Length: 335
Image (cartoon, rainbow, N blue to C red; front, side, top):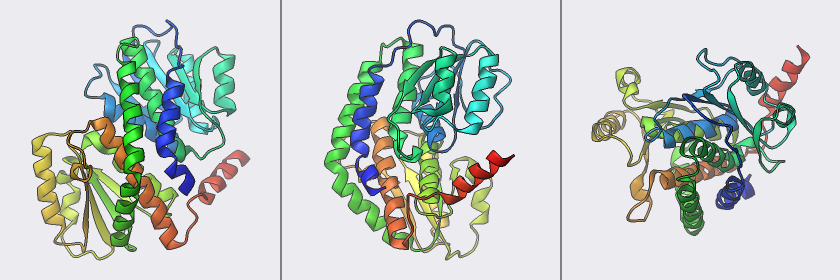
């Protein structure tokens, strides 16, 4: 896992190389909505892509994480089926339903039944490098989904700009990597055995979810996340007494409204009265004069991944194993 995380910048570069070879032809036209179907390490790529595209995309983007698909899915839906292994049960069932609705489909996978279905049904598909854990292939998932949507909607007009920026991001993260590792180690020292409560803005929900998932899978830790301003209407009330078993994280990045930033500052002030430590991941940690939202996303994904690894190392747990997930899949095969 340590080698996989360290290789993250190089994965961005390789993912861009794959994206340059995407050929969707002229099959995709008259798209009214986008559905991204995936679970776990594949599904998070859709959440992040949605966050990044939502300010510019004029049609709805829906994340589908179930066997079912929304009733509105039809022949004018761009349906992106993403499963790194190609054998994710829910994703395969959802794909079958999208086929029955005559949706315009793109499959993203490394192998398995999804690749077989894509080939047998003559569906557009992108093949990723195989043999890795889905959660360490996040950059491949995010970048392919971003590029597919841009190609379908913009007909390649802005794809080159995105790929140029991603390659610049790869270079910057490589140069900053040792600083990011040191930052992650400092944060782990503050976390102790406390359960993280992670808060951020709607624009960065993918980061908060990624943080939770990596703590779950790599660190074998429980974690929860919520969004500001929604948590201001419910969860903030629960912070009304000292809680020595919890730690609050705030992901405070640039791309949000000033009113939401004001809300976060008030929330930090409120919650800091009831916990021993409040930790903030913010734009000031990036020692550059000007950065894009895309750069912030990839920068903090990398720090979050390192935090989850060093926490696992400190706790003496194996970040690679996921026995409860393997057990569940085996039990499902019996029915």
